[in-house]
Amino acid sequence: MELADVDLDWEFLLERIERLIDLGESFLEDKLQSWEPEPDLFARFASFRWDGDQLIPQESDEYQAPSELVGLEDLARSLQQNVEQFVAGLPAQHMLLWGARGMGKTSLVRALLAESVVDGLRGVDLGLDSVDRLDELLELLERIPLNFLVVMDDVNLLSSSLKETLFRRLGGGLVDWPRNVLLCLTSAEDLMASREHLSEEYEIFGVQARIPSLGEEGYLALVERSLHQYATGFDMGEVRQQALQWAACRGRFSGRLARQFVERLTSQSALEEIRQQKPQSQPSGEEDAGES
Image (cartoon, rainbow, N blue to C red):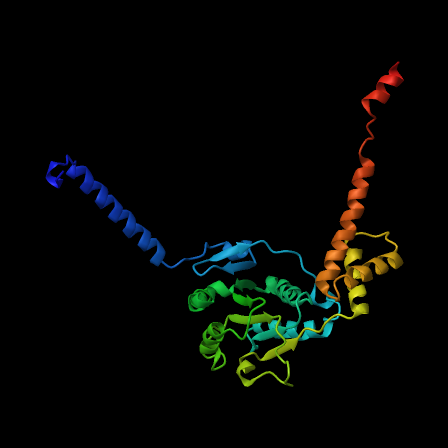
């Protein structure tokens, strides 16, 4: 069969092709058009995630005040002063925090953000999958009359692509960086392994701090403080013993383990109360025997 023998509705086919072309052009226009936030977006939300194209609002969890972070009080005060300088329009330094996982790096950063939200500070999480769109993010934030804390959590600072992007923008200090954007990176790497100081390339971070590991007493203090926020009436001597057993099974002390233990303990207690409040049902045989 030849093409000439096929019965086609050429007019209908051309209409469909034109429709597809129109849809394709509309799609490209939408993709190329820069995203603009809604007028009240930053009044309704304090925390966002940059997905490479737009800011996605995130529900803010409740965090402890910086002064309440066990074992991190002095460091928290220093970092908070840096953030307050930034919010006040004074010179401030980008921050680099590192230490083992679960030691409170993320909690500390969130606490710093929460303290300054009322002063116009907003947080933006920047994932490694969107770091190549950092320039677009900075251009967007520069146009918004608020201050922003851009957080990159648990990054690998040895990554060549990340270093190339950051050092290209920060190599000269704050020259090519928006005045209303402060950067904070956290890393689980031991950045000072086998050397006394960080290498010169990290000087772009004016604030550098290692989050210390929790010892036994710091861990137990965090357990007790966290437990008092949930409930009272627990035998603290027994709680301490159970908390130490919980940590011993994992071979370390950390803020994350303390939080997990407290959540488990309080949940078990609440579940036991629920069980006790349930009416006790008797087997059908016993009910029948009673009636007879």
